Image (tube, rainbow, N blue to C red; front, side):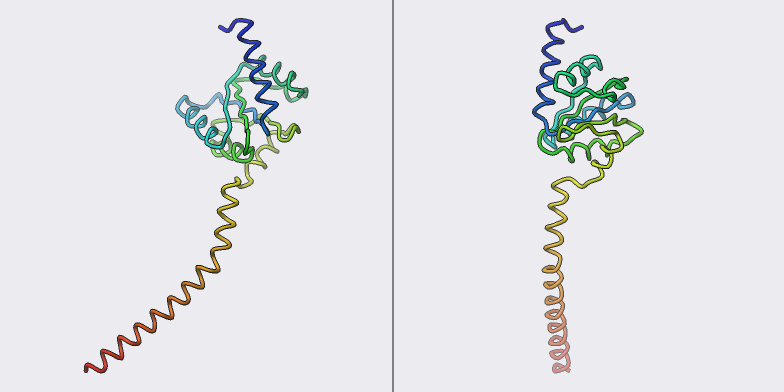
Amino acid sequence: MLTKLQKKELVKEISDQIKKSQGFYLVNFSKLATKELEDLRKNVKAKEGQLKVVKNTLLKIALKEAGYSNDEIEKISGQTMINFAFSDPIGVANVLNKVGEEKIRILGGVLEQKWLSSEEVKRIAAILSKEDLIAKLIGSLKSPMAKLVYVLKGNQQKLVYILQEVKNQRKE
């Protein structure tokens, strides 16, 4: 059981993290096993985010202290966690989306100080992460060069086969 002072400190900590993050997502995780929660925590941390499980009353107070007052906040219920995205909000949303709707339920979130519904968060999660977009771009740029090398290499191989056949015919 937390004391009043500990609760105030926790509310201040969450409020500060809300203010310094680029975005955050609220998730109901009632069907998530402990091991899955730890895996989710690691995956969110890999995307430079942080996952925090907090009581709903403290979360609502922290959100109000951070300047968010919305009807959606009042609807928060069940086992709730807040997922902070400090540098890659799309990456954190992707991680949450990969867990699946049978395990967690996205309640909503905030991106660039704008409140998002759960459907909007899911649409954001469908966007490829920054690393995936860079990888696709590099693959697109590399593809024509790789095809050219393949074509040139094919001609060299054909020349080697022809020379080998000529050599075999001269031996006979």
